[in-house]
Image 1 (cartoon, one colour):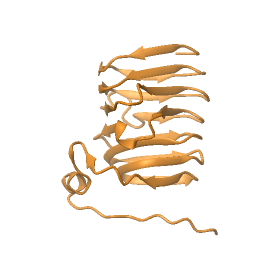
Image 2 (cartoon, rainbow, N blue to C red):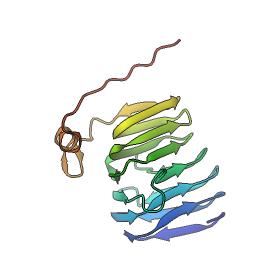
Image 3 (tube, helix red, strand yellow):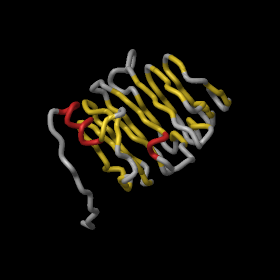
Image 4 (cartoon, one colour):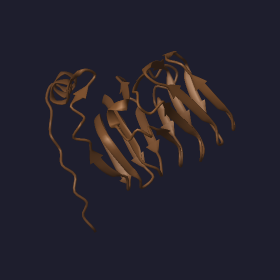
Length: 176
């Protein structure tokens, strides 16, 4: 909520929404089954705690099919461990996952049917498996070589099961 701090334990929830400087702490380790995640304004954060443990967030998109994750300017999921595998986000739907950060994010995003939009000019460290990735916002993408599994399968196996085939992509930034 607005300017408030809330601590959640693993479990099933509807829409998780944080606004105007609020913080929602997701207690690790554990699995969160949610409908939607929204952080609407600068300084709104989801925090993984303690940082030495990991969480899995399963997003259904129920009631927010077009935008099951929507993070506005300077909002983020704070995974202070800087270990991408400590924050796994799974989404099977076809909506758009929007991460508009401004600060670094460490995560594994498993959304093979969805569009993922990254904005904010920060660093994304980890793995993204998506139908499409829009990085027109200047986010620097860094693959975490330690990420060898997605949903308990090897990264190549998980991708092959989700899409029928897989491609290894390399990114290189070129000035125009």
